[in-house]
Image (cartoon, rainbow, N blue to C red; front, side, top):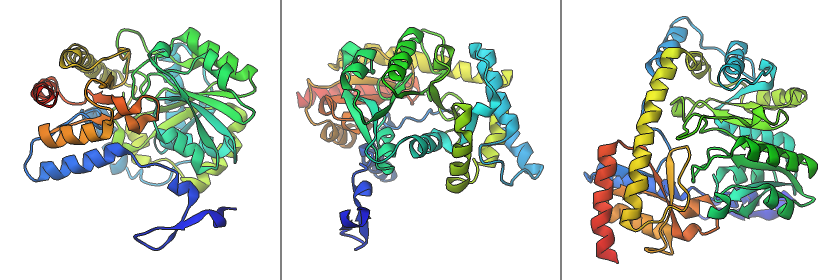
Length: 400
């Protein structure tokens, strides 16, 4: 029982549940905290650690929020979001991907994290497993743990392009597995699953008696191929998405999920109790997300990110890092640093202190080869990326 698995927090003397102790902190936050401390003391820090685009929210979206606020639209919305915005998102799927969706299937949440929270609460029970690729975004497994389920981490290396495959589902599916969660584009690797791959994953998960959940949070930040959605090939798949990355609304905290319509009563009840409603100003800002003026800005920014990606894919191997799989999307290059370290956190802390370049250690993303991998976020402009590479070049020569 839960009360028998408590421990006393050494600082506060308060009892802590086992589940809370088993949810690991983000190591990158230690990096960020120290980086900010060094910055406050006057050191120039180049931030390549946090996965946040360095562009502000596009002006048309900010203007839409201000207009709504001035009009007095500051109250609660329905628990699953404004009907008008759910319709806008449905129209976006039709316009961009040729997918016909009922707006009722689209639920708006406080960030994509809110969507995953509702899914975990409604679909996972004690002892259930959520299958995930290792490496992957760590909070996904922590949401499962929060509801007494667990993340079932499956090592996925360069040969699988760091993604779950139908063969891995077949090999590792257990009686406790309820769903497989994949990301396309993925964090930290930037790899993208093709529509045939997504179709096979959905078919395999269904045949094994489970569900396929697809994190499409970085959808739109694609390089070399057009964005796609699993819903083009698997209408029964669950989609998690966000206005944070491509649309540049990280701090507004607004995401969405596409779910089977018969799940809605349960999800609405949970949303009412847990969130009450998504943030109202954010929803009004998002009403302008799909306007041509906004999309033109976003595509210009994607081109800038593509240029940064190309630079790092050339520069990092010249420094001695290995990039086994080039990222197809997202904001990151996941690099093998085994030439330099077998302790990725220590390496990143030392790089920060000695060069002023902040990076993310691989241990934030799982266990598989985590101590020898580093994530580089191309969330600084090209001039700063070049400066970071110059600093690292001199330092790496000195330590090897």
